[in-house]
Amino acid sequence: MASTARAKPAAARRRAPRAGRPAAGESRVWHPNTQMREWGAFDEVVRGEGMSLVCADGTRLLDGVASMWCNVWGHSRRELAQAMARQAATLAHSPLFNLTHGPAERLARELVAIAPGMDRAFYSDNGSTAMEAAVKMAIQHWQNLGERSRPSIVALEGGYHGDTFGAMSVGYVPGFFSRFRRMLFGVSRVPAPDAFHRGIGAGDDASQCADAAERRLARGDVAALVMESGAQMAGGVRIYPRGYQRELARACRRHGALLVLDEVATGLGRLGSIAEYTAQRSRPDIVAFGKMLTGGYATMGATLATRAVYASFLGEHHESRHLFHGHTYTGNPVAAAVALENLRLYRRHGLMGRVRRTSRVLGGHAAEMARIPGVADVRHRGMAMGIELARGAPPAGQSVNRVVYEEGRGRGVYLRTLGNIVMVVPPLAMPAPQVSRLCAAVAETVASVARRLG
Ligand SMILES: *Cc1c(COP(=O)(O)O)cnc(C)c1O
Image: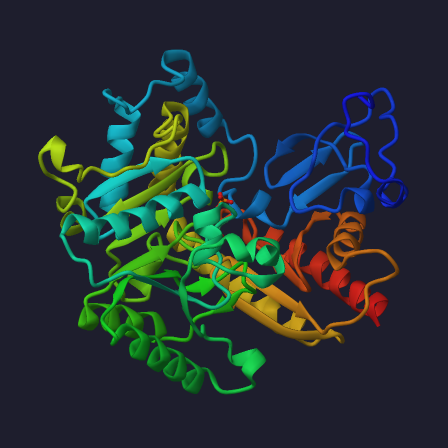
């Protein structure tokens, strides 16, 4: 290996961290958004049981973040595993290029049924690709109509839409993406509601933000307004004040811009409604789902569009109006089959009713979290809560996330933070007693971490 490496100047050689020879059996996994040197070794999960993850050393961790906000029914759910096994044994993959298959057809029908106003479903692999497809649809829609006076995309400050380049461009959380800023395409940004950090009332915050968006849309050059639906999750669990999203939807209509909603994190019941935009009384032209679509069992994204958007893509082949986007695994039958089974379980178990009841339990714990010394703010809606810690210096060389993970692990819960926000995002169907147990462990964790941060 050394012989193929290009010779570096001596100074650079001295500065470069030593790679060392990996020991036999050393991990070759490069973890996401992780300082590998800080972590060194990771707990190895060997199986999931109900709402818990079980590690190789026997440690059981109650899943406090629904395995990155995806899990609905807990782990190793028989019906979901069987749906995948059945589909894999019948047809594991065949493309939607020149062909179709039953699971993709049935799931698309199901999706447009749960998403009022939507007419077609386009499949991709995850939330980022669902948003890439959404933005490309919006841009190409205006081109297909021959409309050249709408070159701009407007998005909210602090929005998050995924980690690929298009998604990083429309969403921009500086702490995540500043390294790539120079390479991102231009987007106009308007302020998003953030009453806590601005120190103003939610009503004033909402109307100021809605006014700013309206002024931008009124210039008439906007192809689409892109925003998360209901709340900005990764940008800091900023829950929209009542009426805000509806105002933006109305402003889009008034000024002829498409409304593109990202429900990857907040839809499918996370905030309490299957389609969060119905709760927000705002009809999108394009909406993206991901994360919980398959119950957390397979990777899949879906981008839904209205009849009007879809119709602009119809024409003769030589007109090149068709959507110029597609992924190898688009509409994968195993993912589609488990998504169908997941949505069937939603109906069969009245999941939205359950979520509304359990979310009151979670919300009840928010008040006690807010009283913990060192907690600056607690924000909650549906089955999502963010506990923002007052900023303090983490113990030498450690990230807040690492400290929270360790403290949570010691109390039998799996946690991951967003910066200094401790996230509580349980599997949607977590029963109330387990939600309370989770919250008790989180409260102890937060209190202990806040003391260590000083
Ligand atoms: C997670 C997330 C995405 C990206 O989804 P991936 O599956 O990680 O690509 C996009 N938008 C929102 C709102 C998300 O929370």
